[in-house]
Image (tube, rainbow, N blue to C red):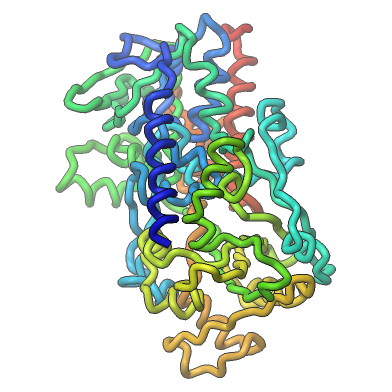
Length: 508
C-alpha cells in the first residue's frame, strides 16, 4: 500500500508542476483597469464567462470582467477529483445557520456552502453534468460533450424496471479526459482580445449610485483600490452567484429596508432602494443511498486501492483514459410526477476525511451511512435521491431501482441511525425514512433564486428602478430546475447576450 501511495503522490506532484509551468499567458489579464467601459461584468463564473466572451465578440465594445479569484487549479481538469476543489481550491467558505428540521447528523446542524473563488466559478466544483437536449443551443457546448462509459452497472441501471422514470446515461463537458468549464469553452478563447480586460484577484466592494444609475464600481485588487466610473451607455452586469450578488447589493444600499437599517451599525451604507433582495433561496437536497454489490459480478467502482494505484494515474496522465478520466456519475433517472431525480454514482468507498470536511457531516453519521468505507477494496455504488424537498417517495424510488439491478446483485444498505431509534428501521416505514432524511440529507450546492423576486428584477433582468444594473446568474432563476442549474445559467447568459447584440449600437 505504501508503494502505491508513494507512486501516486509522485505522479500527482509531477502533474501539478506540469500544469503550473504550462499555464498560458493571456493578453486580456490586466493589473489596472481603464477609465471607462461599455460593459462591466462582476464575477467570472458560468454567467460571467459566457457574457464576457459573447459581448466582447464585437471589437468596438469594450468589456471589463472583474473576478475575485484567480485561475482554477489543475485539480479542476481531472474528472475524478472535481469535488476535491472544495477542499484544495479557493472558495468563499460560507455556512448555513443552524437548521431546525434537518442536518441532525451534522455538526451544530450546519451545512457548508462552498462557492468557487476562481475563474469558472462554483460550476467548476460540480461535475458539469449536462443533458444533450438542453445544450444544443450552442455549438461550443455540443462539441465538448462526452457520454458516460458503458459498464455492467450502467446497463443494469438503465434496464431497471421502474416504468415511472425516464432513464438515461450521463453526459459531461470534457474532452480527451479533461473537464471543460465555461471559462475553458467561452472565456479563455476570448482572452487575447484587445477590447476584453480581465481583472483577477479583484473583489468588488460596493456600487455607488446617482440618478438611479450605477455611477462608480469600487473594487480592490490585493492592496490597491480602484474606482471605475460609468458612462451614459455603460451597463453593469452582476454574475457573482446566488450569495455574492445579493450580498454586494446589500453592501451597496439595495435590499430590504429592515435589513439595511440593521447592518448600518457595522457597515456604512445608505438606503438606495428598498427591494426584497436575498430572499427566496432554493436548493436541491439529496439523500445518499448506499448499495452493496456482488464483487465477483462487478469490480469497476472507485475505491482507495484503485485510487492509489499508480497504473490508473499513469493511464490518465499518458492517454487521458481510465479511472481518473470519469466523474463516475454514470446515469440518471427522472421522475417528473414526483419532482425527483436519481443519480447513479459508482463510488465503492467514499473517503471519510474528505466527505466530512466538505459537508460538515459528523463522522458517526458517515460511518452509519457508508458501511465498510475503511475497506480499500470495497466495491459498491451510491444512489443520490435528489429533489427540492427530499420525500420518502424519492428515497424509495432510489432503493427500488438499486435493488432491481440484478446483473450486479445490488443490495441496499439501510442505515440504522441512533437518532431514529424510536421508529422501526424499515424502508417501508414513513416515519423512519423521514427521520433518515432529517439526519443525513444534504445540499447539492445548487442555490438559486435570491434575486428572482418579481419586485427585484424586470423581465430583461435589470434591477427595478435602476437603469444600468443587471443580474445574470443563478440568483435570477425563479424556480429550481428539475435537473442542473448550471444549464439554466448558460441559457440565461446566452439569451442576455443575444438581446444586447440586438440593441442599437451593438453590431458585429
